[in-house]
Amino acid sequence: METINVQYKITPADYRAAAYYGLLARNRRIILFAGSFAVMALFYAVLGQLGVISAGPWVYAVGIAYIVWAALMALNMERGIRTYMKSKDCLIGVPYYFTFAGERIRFHIPAQNVRRELSVKKLTVFELRSVFLLYENAQQAYIVPKSAFTPDHVSQMRAAFRKMIPDSFRSKY
Image (tube, rainbow, N blue to C red; front, side):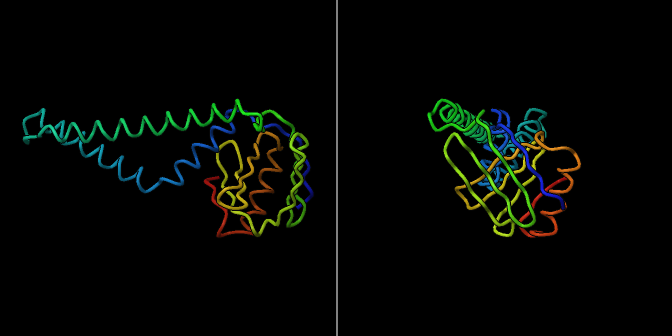
């Protein structure tokens, strides 16, 4: 693979995609359970309205409770995103310099005087529709917008991640 050098800026949409992906990944089981339960409550409510079964008020209450919970979770995430975007430490819109060479990835973020060199083999990488998320650990992730790369570079990076970290790379592409 050739060395890939790009400069990019993270957009609010990139940050939002990464934040929601993180929320869903951290809460995947509970969200699946809640969604399944809400669908079952809706199913029982429909059957109750059709007179097939006797659906008690608990069916509606539980279904509504899960919908409200999901809405509150999304609103809380949006509040966190907006708070971050207003903070002095916000890195949305500042230049990032990214280099992928061999088994190393380098980031330079002049706005925060950050220089990091990482071994690809120590990363967990998720490819979303518009970004790569490179996790150094559970608290430290780098958002790399795919729009900064040529389609060939995106394919090269995907192939390199699949080869170097097959158990730590997730992609639907």
